[in-house]
Length: 248
Image 1: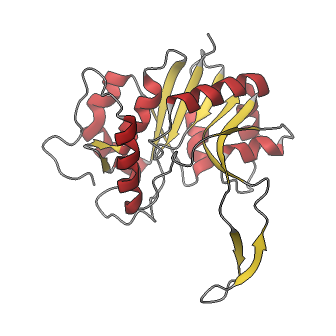
Image 2 (image 1 turned 180 degrees about the vertical axis):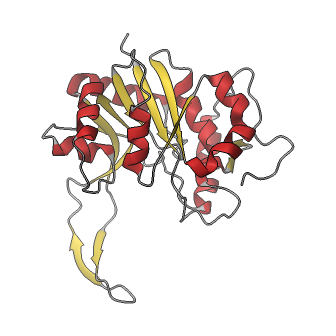
């Protein structure tokens, strides 16, 4: 069986989330922290040999105090991230198990990904070496000016445009090479670094419901999506919010 390591970046500053008490991966969602819903999608898969959660240094102490039991029960490794997302993923790559043949990188704040979508992108990564989940753009797109208020500069053709999602899955040597050569040029996702190597990245179509929580309003939408999926809590689940109404 092909073995995958899963890296879950959760070290961002959550500036757009708009909540002084929580960063978005740790916010309550249907009585559990967002990141726990996300981990559930991977932790019980027989093809996942390692799960690595990447935290900010400033969150380490409070996180372990609140979620240490969950980490131990689920066998999750922790890495400490940096200022940029690529720094955090690089920290996760440095902790890879020798058993991992492929690496899946998935936003810790994207808890609604479906099992069938994970199956599909894992399988395509084995075929292609690199694959990501994505959804085709259906909306009419407008490029705006920098004026205040913004004005329409042009209508952008939506044909062949896709919205990148996660997991983004890569052959281990390929993603390690991409990160070794990443340099200082910004990258907004991991596939972009692999593209710079000249390696093709396959798109695996997924539902737009695989949302990334960015603002408080997204929590309500994620709750509705999770209700339709009705995920089962793992045996021995430790409620991270028992006896405490906030995570700072």
